[in-house]
Length: 455
Ligand code: ADP
Ligand code: MG
Image 1 (cartoon, protein in one colour):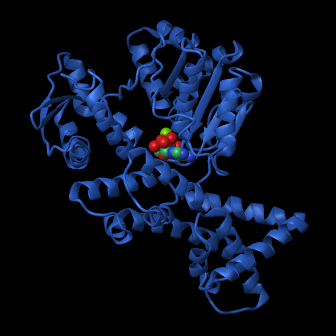
Image 2: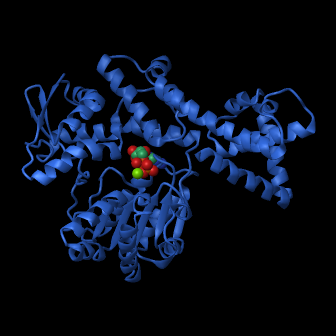
Image 3: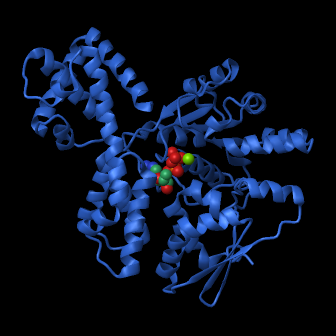
């Protein structure tokens, strides 16, 4: 009954739903379902009731909005729980959803690469925060398996484009060589497939599958770390590929050192290129939103784009999600997207973001305060004595470096205007350049802030 298997008409609707939900959520909840459509009714076939509840409560309105936008139809949604024949499977299915099946856009390659066609280099906005990762990803494609770029490890906090780049690498490799054996998978899938292979006593074919690859793209390897047997298997897979000159690209939500991998694997990872994607600056966030706006052909002003970009700083997925939420609301209700509408509609996510950012400045104040033995109140007080003014200037400088807040926003956190922040920033920068001891002290403070921030 799957309307997606017939391709064509419904594909853009589901692509949009995927963009709104984010690939991870979509893969988890939507991909395993099948969909039928007749009259005004979309029928969703699902493995269990838990699943139905989740889609009904969290995603049904998004699905309806997407259909309305693309077809002009106000649809109703009905659910069917699919009977599952295998009793063991049934038990498992009732406990938790099965692993997502990732098979969206199938390439012409004889090998199922599991790539999402819409993540490409061309629609990835390059910026100072991701430039190195972007260039390294392209270098991998051009020199597949070259020792200098092998493995490539990309890490970042969530929603900053790791998965996008991994798919872009795979898509580009296949574009240049359609018969290349490329495989994208998540660390989580690797672990569960490995466990399954052990249960079915099919470890040999499991191994063969991986070891015949030209390029393995493994996303979120933090899921492999610390699971002794899987980590061991991953190490052997990794070595087999690495030693025969095959390309490995990995992503992680933390640095390889922080993954807690066993020494032999960790040192192998460290032998390639390791690159971090940082949070995008304001111009980049605006560029990303403009690209999305243009791709969906929805008329939304630059002032509104700038408003969203100012408000959502830490996660591109949420940034895009906010735009789509606004677009979807405005197109459904025939409302013109303005800043007040965006403010109202995105109030919850904007305030969450504000809290996230506030934590950051607080962490900076906390660590700097402790280091120089001054009180939290001193950062906002009018006191100008050097023993207070100096740490305050350091904290302002660090806020410009470590957060994505604008200068006026930082100013407000210190009860000052933005020109004071600029002055502090430049002063401290000069001092860092001139004085290596001071530079080391600042580095120490930064690493303290990073650990405080995580807690
Ligand atoms: P991660 O894997 O790091 O959690 P994703 O790759 O899933 O992040 O990115 C989240 C969303 O943001 C995706 O829709 C992706 O296309 C988009 N995105 C992230 N960075 C960029 C960028 N620089 N240019 C365009 N889109 C981006
Ligand atoms: Mg990801």
